[in-house]
Image 1 (spheres, rainbow over the protein chains, first blue to last red):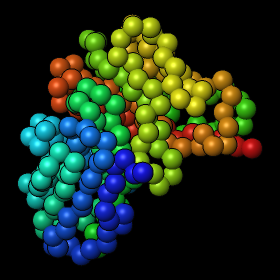
Image 2 (tube, helix red, strand yellow; image 1 turned 90 degrees about the vertical axis):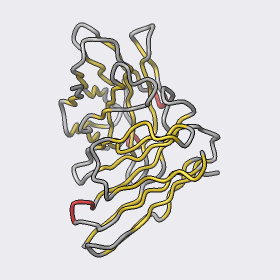
Image 3 (tube, each protein chain N blue to C red; image 1 turned 120 degrees about the horizontal axis):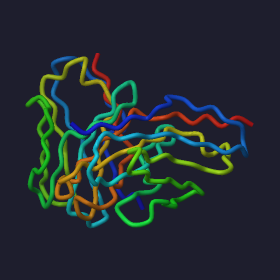
Amino acid sequence: DTAVSQTPKYLVTQMGNDKSIKCEQNLGHDTMYWYKQDSKKFLKIMFSYNNKELIINETVPNRFSPKSPDKAHLNLHINSLELGDSAVYFCASSHRPEDEQFFGPGTRLTVL
Amino acid sequence: AQSVTQLDSQVPVFEEAPVELRCNYSSSVSVYLFWYVQYPNQGLQLLLKYLSGSTLVKGINGFEAEFNKSQTSFHLRKPSVHISDTAEYFCAVSPPGSGNTGKLIFGQGTTLQVKP
């Protein structure tokens, strides 16, 4: 059984479009995260939600909007996509913020 | 601001040889330290973590790391590597006071290439 799943796995789109990436975890965790991994494999946290409440919002453009409909889901919506948004986006979850984070397989976003 | 430096971007090594992947962090106060592994086209998986206590931490797949507070280092070691250890390895730190947010700051990653 997949613990943290993301859809889609690959996303290719044109500049200016709006797209969403979905994340679901079946671990019963209360905390979920979004990370961005750039072409040099550098990983940086974008957002964190604990019990559906936003607790980390790192200097991310407001074109990025996370949405947590329930504790098992954290979706990422991106408006007006730019070339620089091309990256691999990872979702993760943990039981509590201080616990081990479990990562999803990633979504490779390519903006043309 | 907190930072993590992985001193080697690539480490080539022959199978069954020992390996050390180096990690230094900037904080002089107590932090939590982690090593994650990323196999090709996969997400990250926790290898080991240091929260407190013994400075030698053992993880999965035969890896271990030693926390050195005076040198602000957390180097990862394995006495004998396998081809299957070929992957990207990330050192990460949870900054002081971030325990209630889960914020992790990652190093740049080290590519371990195990050759037959």
